[in-house]
Image 1 (cartoon, rainbow, N blue to C red):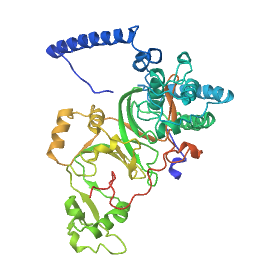
Image 2: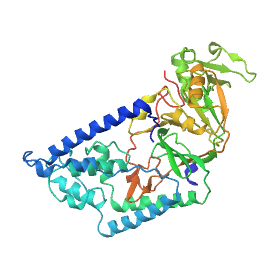
Image 3: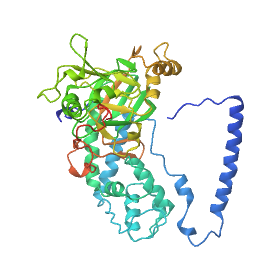
Amino acid sequence: MSNKSGIVALSRRALLTGAAAAAGAVAIAGQAVAQTAIDELISAPKRGNWDDQFDAKASRTAAAVTSNTPMLSANNFIYIQQAITEYQAIVANGGWPQVTPSVKLKIGVIDPSVQQLRQRLMISGDLPRSAGMSNSFDSYVDGAVKRFQARHGLPQDGVLGEFTLKALNVPADTRLMQLNVNQQRLQAMMNKPLEQRYIVVNIPAAYVEAVENDRVALRNTAIVGRISRPSPTLDSKVSDVILNPYWTSPRSIVEKDIMPLMQKDPTYLARNSIRLIDAQGQEVAPETIDWFAPKAPNLMFRQDPGKINAMSSTKINFPSADAVYMHDTPTQGLFNKLMRFESSGCVRVQNVRDLVVWLLKNTPGWSRQEIERVIATRVNTPIPLADEVGVHWVYITAWSAKDNIVQFRDDIYAEDGNAQLALQTNIGVEKPAGSVEDDILPQ
């Protein structure tokens, strides 16, 4: 994957006025009363023999991991240097213990291995040392596990499942190596000036940041390229947004996927509104093509706009040597997956219309209402941007955007130089023809 060797460098708005504001004030007051009652219950002197092992305040006050400081920020270079210093000290002091439970650890469990877990979380700064040592998985430990999970891009359920346990047991010296590798990547990126407004796709983290004036305006979940068809790193500028885009299949998809599908089901193209277009712009009937021929026909495979379009409502265009882009998708359920390495190289964006509103906010005539109106027409509509917005796809598996909050992700494309960091390699293998991709249509 030579394209990696030169790596370079919110919430929704709600307007509450009038009666809505008054209603909100009443609701807040009600919540305050309810919280007071809960606090009184927690503080009651006689709550049972588990009192000394349970403190709900620990879960409620778990440190926030997210930050509105963008990943590509000069501040982050300072934070990652700070993290390297801290991890050097951890390694010099012997690292942290392996956690080897005989039962699944979660809140309420009492097991000797919880002491290992407590020590592990204390050393990495996820659990306050004042929590002490015991065999009890109490709410202090629950809050610490959730903080650890958030720092590693894992579901914050407080349970030591397979992926959480594997992440816990990556040795401290391996994490230090990962920080050093990513410091070099960030340093290379910082050598290039960034735009006032830009989009960052962090491929290993599978998320998108929209950045303005060095602050994160939006952060969206993404789906990126699987191991066999990786998303490239790149630096470009957004040229236009297309509402109701046509989808034109890459030649590789035609050969690897559509040809075998047509051999099995001659109605596949028609059912998915895909038309064959020749060099003169004329439509060609699918039944005139030999789908068992050694080579795919030299035709354009173009899908009409619509709900089943592979890019759904939106495509975000920018110049790219790899002909990749960002887009919507009809398969929204895939955003709920833990391992979002599903595409053929392009990047799907959850809540992409929020991102489009942000992209077009300086382009006259394109309010949220107008964008939604045009999407509803199903008419292909390209919109050139009026201002410059950069787009940067990066490969960063370790960073810190907040003091003492170090984030790690799996080295999904094996770029960091240690096989133990690519833990979740059971996903992203080559899929058979007909599988659902961002660049392939549902059957």
